[in-house]
Length: 239
Image (cartoon, rainbow, N blue to C red; front, side, top):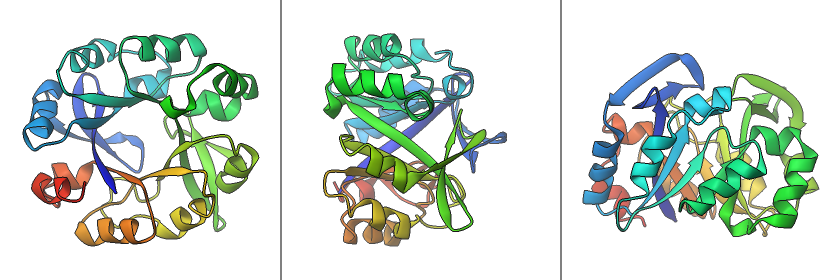
């Protein structure tokens, strides 16, 4: 299983939100470049970047920081947040972003979804399917987790079988270190065409082991790193 350390950008700083709440922010590093170098020094060459400002507003406020990341030799990044049209998507690919995470627009706008399907290398696209469990069903959330939809996670995946990469995040446990929602992930993995990138709630090596045991291909780790619950040395040995 591939471990991908995470950097969430808000106002140019590395932060984490608790359960996606923009009013509950923990700042961990005022220098994203410094944080990237910490990951590189530990042996990671692939990092997950979320532009929280863009996720909420659709405006790529942190693009200059992302462009600086792309100048670092030996580093590849996947980027999400505010990618809501084909022009933005193509611009980010053209400047060297390895994979793009699409969410809100790709969920709400079928035309945009069809543009992605027809005109893009699907290996380069990750569908960010963030969900809240409501009445025992995983329901998708959009606009930087600020708005719930009536779209069921499993229905969305089943209706779009052409999607290759799915980043699934249980918002209710994200940032809590309480453990990932393996029951949901197991069901996603029943679709053999899906490359699952698990996210949310990971707090210790036992959580990593559980994800690996159910066949998860990739895993994003954020707060557990910043809170020193998981060491980068242990995580790099999983890769």
